[in-house]
Image 1 (tube, one colour):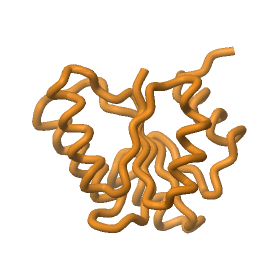
Image 2 (image 1 turned 120 degrees about the vertical axis):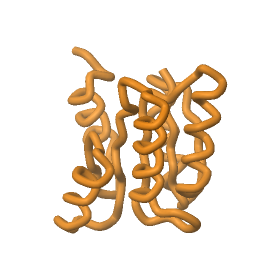
Image 3 (image 1 turned 60 degrees about the horizontal axis):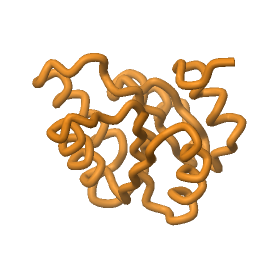
Length: 131
């Protein structure tokens, strides 16, 4: 399985990579623009991502816009099933949560700092971890 982590903070990238590397082959990008390009490239190579972990607040392009563009690409190219996306953010703001689920069709939402138990709980809900 493959995962893409889009996170502009070095420590956040490192922590998520360490948490995920026992379950996924992990690629890391630093902004939403790179996430869209990595997603596109992964499909062109025939090695799509199973999971996206997308920070909401990033330079160049934020995570919500990147996920919106990824969803549009999936729609356009009839990519199914859609990649599962967990949004990560320091903002515990109801409006942001609603936008993540409604606008970006996010699969889940994690408030930073990301704890391993919380991340694995979300991965279990998405079927990546079974007991």
